[in-house]
Length: 173
Image (cartoon, rainbow, N blue to C red; front, side, top):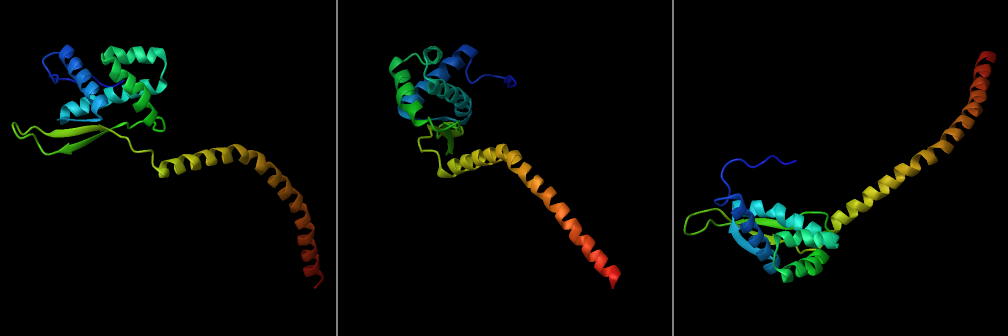
């Protein structure tokens, strides 16, 4: 369980913070990216990723849990149909935070938080295939090792008489 955040909230109260994060998540899913302050983006990321994970499940219970946070039905529909379909191959890391120049008015660190729409890289797919192959090789390895031991045991007695013959030949000389 993550440790609770201590100190002041992003807004005046926890309820206000929840509403702000819900509105930012709605805007993120509508537009694909939003510009906000860095602390708000860092607080929004876990919420948005959890909502996308619910959308990937796609069942009624998940839809109702998302509707608790995002009140706009059209945004929830887009989340469950389009965004969840784009993120189907990903196992996490649905959002990206990019730091940009500080805001002009108050010099607050600003950031862009956006949905990662690029397909999963081929390198990750190759790594997964390699892991699967290694795992299947481990499962088959004990079966393959048993005949090797039997052949080694069968060869060992055959080598022993040859060693005895060389020893006898040395004694004869």
